[in-house]
Each structure stands twice: as C-alpha cells, then as structure tokens.
Length: 310
Image (cartoon, rainbow, N blue to C red):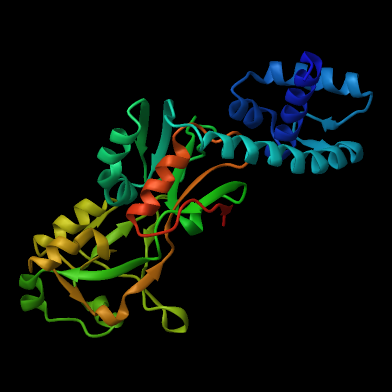
C-alpha cells in the first residue's frame, strides 16, 4: 500500500469516528489527538475528495447526505479490518503492553482477582492498570481500553462480551439478627425489619428486586445504614445491623460457615451477567482477548464471542 493510500485510510477512519461519536471532542479523545488536529485532517479529507462531508456549527455536528452515505459504507469495511487485525492479534504468542480497565468493585473481587496470578504467569509482558469504580464512566473519555459492568449497563455503541452467566441476587441475615427479629417469609415482611439500604452508581437509593419474571417485586427497604459498597453492607449484616441484599457469590463462604443465612431463597432474583465492553471501532488492545478468554474459562463458559452492547 502506498503512503498516500495509508494516509487516506487513516483520514477516513477519523471521519467515521467523528460521525459515530457525533462530537469532535469525543472523537479526538478516542483517537488520542487534539480537536484542532482532527479538524485539520477532516478539512484535508474534504479537499482531497472534493465533497463536503460534515455540517458543523458551534452546537451541532451532522454529516451531509454524501457524508452519511460514505460513513455507512465505510463502517462495513473498517469493521472488517478491525476484525482481521483482532484475529491476527490472537495468533501472537506473547501479547505485550498496558491494558487499562475500569471495573465494578464486585467484578474486581469476583472475576478479576481469582484469575490474575494465571494471567500474569501466562502473559508476563502484560501490565494491567485497573480502576475500580461503581459509577458508570465514559471509558473512552477517561482513557480506559475496556470496562466491566452488568450487561444491562453496557452502552449501545460498545462491543460487549458476557464474562459470566446470570448473577443471583439474594437477601442475607446473621443468625443473631434472625433470632432477634424473626425470619421474613415474603418480600413485604422486609418493610417492617431493619435492612441495609443500597446506594447505586448514580447515587440514588436502590429498591431491592426479589423474584423473577411476572413475580418480580421491588421493595423500598429502610434501616440504620445506607451504603454504596458491598463489602460494607456484608460487614453490617455480619454485625447483625440488618438484612442485606447482594450477589450470592459474594457471601458463599459466610453462608457455608453459618455466619450468614440466605433469607427467602425462593425469592432470589436473577440479574444480568458481568460483561466486559470496549469501543466498537478500534483495534482491540493487546492482552484483552486473552483476559476475556481466561475469565470465561474460569467461569465455565466458551471462548470469546462478541455481541453488540445492550
């Protein structure tokens, strides 16, 4: 490929990124360049093609009719290139580089921590920069290569891969608390009992979801403590401060040893799987496919299978 052809292909990728992000600033962050450099390359591309591709004002950015047609056709070709490069990268014996991840606290504890020793044993030249955050962040704007959230929280414009099966949510309580207050038999009983309230990523209080399908009910519990950290909620439950709501996998050891008990197990609720996601129009960074495969292997799932984000 001639140098001029490579430059044109790079500029076309810039154009498609701008259209997809609908923002010069967001496109510049994704591509790792300045907005002024992006504007210069877009003007150069329009001059070279002899067609105006974008209509820009101080408040909006929209492709022209010709630009929209070009972008839609380029999407297919650029995706094919990304897929081919991704396939090629999986044939490398030793991925090398830095992988920046942003993950939920529960995901870091349940699915990342167990596989880290094996990951670095297999891929000693990889470095993982892990940010733990229960807020939903824009991974592109914040400079992360990938994020891990529940499947129903994956942004629409991302590629998402389920890392686990559906997650089971349960109510737990200490034997001491149950002896003191009695054991609830139905969700409405929790309204009269002390519970550890939950605050989620957008800082709102979370109503506990119990049951599945048409039997699902949401309970707005009250209690002495409200927390946005699962560790703190579990610790409060262990101290007998109230009933708590969490992933069953987080308290498997405590339940096995009798320090906590599952309450109303027939009202457990099935939630979406942990899902890793990354931008849909960029070469997959080194080590990401290998990390996904190792987690899915540990969870008893098949190897990598991508899907569009929910």
